[in-house]
Image 1: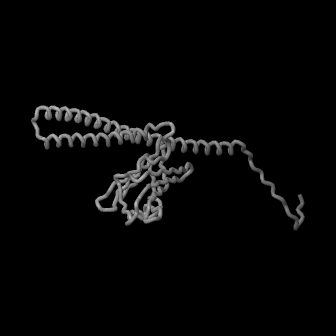
Image 2: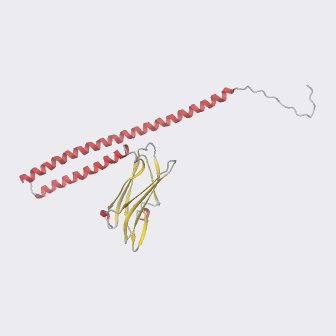
Image 3: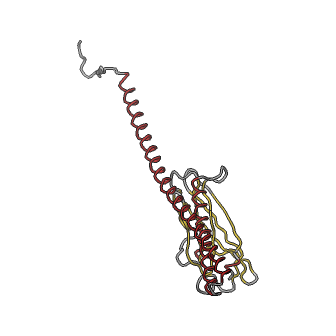
Length: 247
């Protein structure tokens, strides 16, 4: 073919059409993604199973200790009865045994609370699931106006992954003739933010020591939990200031 000088020539490129190559590439990619997802899923199941076994072992140990303590109380109670009837011990010795029984009962009560706590996590009721405030406790400290606090946070049933967020703790009361709300960071030197950060799978305890300002009479403790992520939750709970923790 004659070529005219100065004219533009089109180049023809021939490519081999392979319709199945793109499909195979897409299929290999899909198989790889499914394999990664399955690996992550089974790894999560393995970790959750190990944690459940550990908690189950702890619960069984607590139940065994509870049963042993009950037997010990029955033995000591029977001994107290025999000693009182036979007059073999004086009043002080009897009081000492009674005190031992009292302490054992208190210990059993603590163990029962712990067993109930673990059971609540592992086998919750149908409506008791998700992020929860299991306990808010206030107790007097060694100095005037000083108190220890403990707030137990739990993730019930849906504890296959960690949950994180902030816990806001406020104290409501009267200062003079005014009603005021004081955040935890104003009362606990160890807290510097308005919210206490939390991150846990099964439970986490927020605890410390606070000091109330003079002339402040506490009335309520308010706790608000706000988790982050795709399944964010907000939980609020308030309790009256306990009588045993009077300012």
